[in-house]
Length: 262
Image (tube, rainbow, N blue to C red; front, side, top):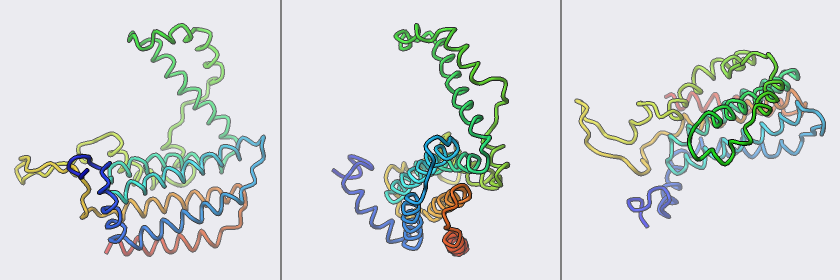
């Protein structure tokens, strides 16, 4: 079925995928090479089975890679807003990865953050009168809430923004992270690619398929940047001996950045 009938699920999307790649060859090629190196690097990791810092670092690194890979799969099919949303998720995982790699003491705080989120969910479901929660309401007891509160303790609630500052990624947070967040939260600017408005704000057309004129370079460059930065963090913890490779990739990224700006 056609794009008109089935949207991005249409078999026709494969033709668009090839054309997007053809129009962005240097950028897709760079992301592919960085991603390939990440997968080679993962086999060098020797994480100790009882070391929470190393275990979390490995899990976060794999998640970052898969967030980026998912974003690239969407980009090459023209789903740019959705790809940006996934890259924003990858950026958050990257910031947490950096914090974990640089601070063994953050492991306990990271666990408490998970419990704090669980507490919010339990309290929300317990207080919500919707019938959908009736089947589990009996399990959401005072004892469960008290247990989670004990696990959290009196630690302060930290933010991704604070972590980005701690690990030297504040510019990444205030730039790409905030820009991509507009796609995650469906802000007005994120809707511009779906409608064509006149100079006086009148609706002229609705866009519902891939746009071959989309410039994918900014998102592809950020995809590569996330992976390179993730490898740099991982290298500080596991001493993988990939410093020269990171420098090489970083230099090429800077060249592509400059090229994209021309």
